Image (cartoon, rainbow, N blue to C red; front, top):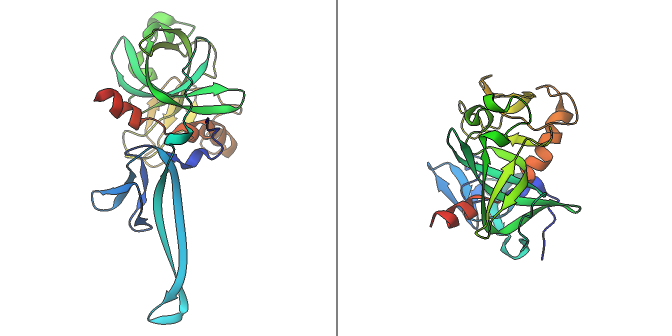
Length: 246
């Protein structure tokens, strides 16, 4: 069975931050780190159950109790593998001056983004970052570990390793990036080469994927264009990463 992702913000992976114990109780398939941060143990759908009950000390007062859990997605992953010419979304695992190593999370089809079941790795070489000024393209200025990237498959091998490119058009590139100056904070795209941390104001360079509207921290629609696909997948990955690392 194939899952068509219609609730992008709810898909999570092992290690993804779900919430704080200040707001939620720890539920199924989650655990605590640093005593306060609730993270996912599995690939699945984030689920919040809220219960209203009377305060034992004041029956007229309603107490709201929220528990955060993760429902497994294992039965809804696609058996399909990426093919040459197909658009994919991937997570950057590591970078070198020559290439970025990525984990492929989803394939794009006419039905939308679909999670893939198998562990598929890929690389984006320095020459495949952009279509202009190729010799001066830089991996470290274009991608960083944990970036979410939209790319196109340009070649494949029998061992589920793929060569990817972000050079074909402006819609390819980094969809989401986390701030290096504020942990767990997603940055905002402000132009074609920069994201900015909304907390610290620090700017970081990336090969930014094109949005429909002009990018601008105050342009909510632009941010939504980015995060629809971004959060949609912001997740389907660490389980595959851990599997490939074993």
